[in-house]
Amino acid sequence: MFNITNYNTVALFIVLIINFTLISFYLKNKITSIIDPLVYEILWLSSNISFLLVFSFQYGFNPFSIIFLFSFFLYIFILKKQLISNNVRYFKKVKIVINKNKIFLVYVMSLALLLYSKVDLFIYMIENDFSHWFLYRFVDLQGRNPILRIINIGVVPVFLYISFLYIFFLKKYKFIISLLLIGYIILLLLGGGRSSLLSIIFAFGIFLIMHRNIYTKKELSKINIYSSIFVFISILFIIVISSMYKTDSVFMDGVNIFLNRVMANADGLEYYMRYNGYDNIQSGFFSYIMSFLGIYIKRILDIDYINIGQQLSELVVRHSLDFAQGSNYTLPLQVMVFGYYFYPIYVVLISLVVIKMRNQLISNSFSKNIRIYYLLSLSFGPIHDLEYFMLRIISCILIYFIFFYPILNINYSLILSNPIKNNLNGAKK
Image (cartoon, rainbow, N blue to C red; front, side, top):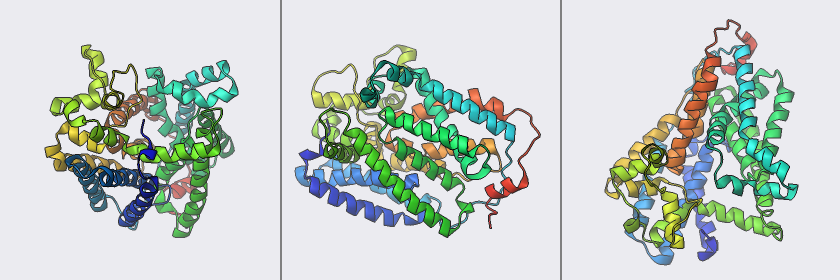
């Protein structure tokens, strides 16, 4: 429903580039590399702020656009003040103790769970021609088996973290695990996951944040160069796959879809302002609790609840919907549901939650580092979509404690050799 052609697209992207440059410069000391998820966060913030500015110049500033803008500005200011600087070596030289048997068992378990979580995709591929495989994401959006969804969300961070650990540090099984990781990426792309490669790249960026004390400035420079190439390739993949959604589409259609998607981060803000969200979407403490826990509460208490994204979509189409891939429940929308008069307090509190997760430091415990990787993966989630963030938190907790915690607490005595410890503890010379 969101369409950038409703606005001056040239102005949108000029303002986007300016905002991205300014915010990147403002937060430059907090960015580890070009594949740091903070870079994506800056792009996300830039697209929202750019839309609000262009929208306001086109329709005039209103109280809501001003509140939205100040919410973002306050959030950025807190990031500047509270995020760990990349110029300070906060990481102590810890010896990460990893049991060979445990890490292998956890990896095998994560791989098995990951494959199981893709059962619906495998069935779809068997039942449909290759040309239709890229459309699977639209089938998936209409509702996946909740158990498979929870497993997938909870297992992917563990699978990726251990894959990176084997490939870049432990070396053993490096070739096989690299093939498995590449196979996983190809599977995601074939299933229509346009941004799959980009998400894997940023997942490695999280891994790099955890172990950044190991790399010299020269090595980080090389990583940034290669990362820039991979990001460019990822964007090309997004454009090409987007152009395959219709049989008569061409490459430029994919470009337009990609550009629209970048700016569509602000779709919920547009719907709220243009379709009188203030009078149609309830606010208050109860409404706020329901906004991110309602999908669970309604199953327990058997009550009707429509999430904020679908409510906004229904305002646009002006009739009820059985299903809607609604806009994300972003920070400014949370502010309005919680109560806009409390917005400075709310923004500070939710920002501190983000900061706490983002500022996690590497541990000498392998099992704790898995949890740290979880937190780093989730760190900007409360700002982007609080409802989906809760689903991810619940999924990660369930999968970790049901499947991985028992393995990690098996009493083995075999510990990795010193050379590997040295690689992991930042003692690289």
